Amino acid sequence: MRFTLDKDGVIEELHVYATVEPDTTGWKVTPTDAAKSIKSFDEDDDVIIADKAYFVNDDTIIIDEIDDIDLVKWDNIKEKSFTAGSVEAIIVADGLDAKLVIFTAGFDKIQKEDKELGVVLDKFRDEDGDWAATVVVYNGGKVDYKLDDKDEQFVGDIIIFTVDVDDELTVSDVVYGSKNETDLDVSGVVSDKKSSSIKIGGTEYKVNSKTLVFDVTDGLDDIEEAAYRDVRNGDKVVAVVENSLVKVIYIVE
View 1 (spheres, rainbow, N blue to C red):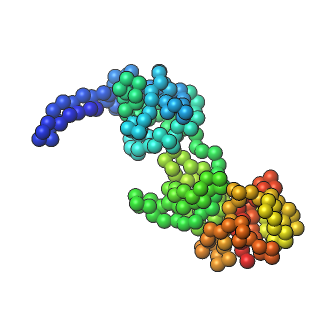
View 2 (tube, helix red, strand yellow):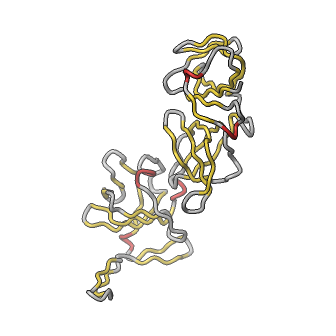
View 3 (spheres, helix red, strand yellow):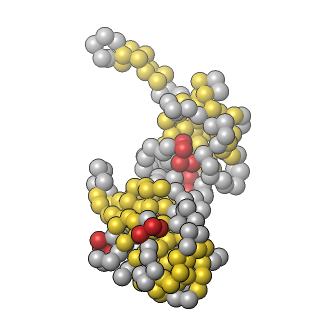
């Protein structure tokens, strides 16, 4: 709806764009032309493609579902892909500019991000009172995420994870730390460190500018960010290796 107020704060003019009520198949939208079947998102031009193109801007309000309302950031969903027609929404527009988007079906069909590799630096309650974690993401910087399950990751864990459209992190696997659910970690003593390679336990691996390094000599709970220059021959390390490339190094001793 749209409304205007008079000088006393009383509603002066009220315009209802659409009404929604539950029915046996989901949600009944009146008028029916307010209900849109979403074909895709265009991240380059910030467009929602339905019966026509609707442009999204900073003023567009986006809501994930009608019976448990949460605001959604366009930046968190614009890269997502889904089967055309599997997602439905009410779109209130001014011409071609979307003013309000409320998903009524299929929001859970919007695909999650690809799996990421990261290191948990901290776990805390955020300003909303929800559990969150600070994660250093390989090739992605340091980010605070809400947690799907606070007991699935602990400070010091190296994790493989996904992030949904609400910026909520879900752990797929713990590579090293509180659990060990993959075969990506190797351990041993550094015997030959060079600018672009490192030999761990007698095996040579490549390193690059994206390689993350942490000091856990005081325990995983006291993990500290470090740099490749801090790694020395004779150090005992644990490393995460994919295709002979070291992505994470933990200095253990």
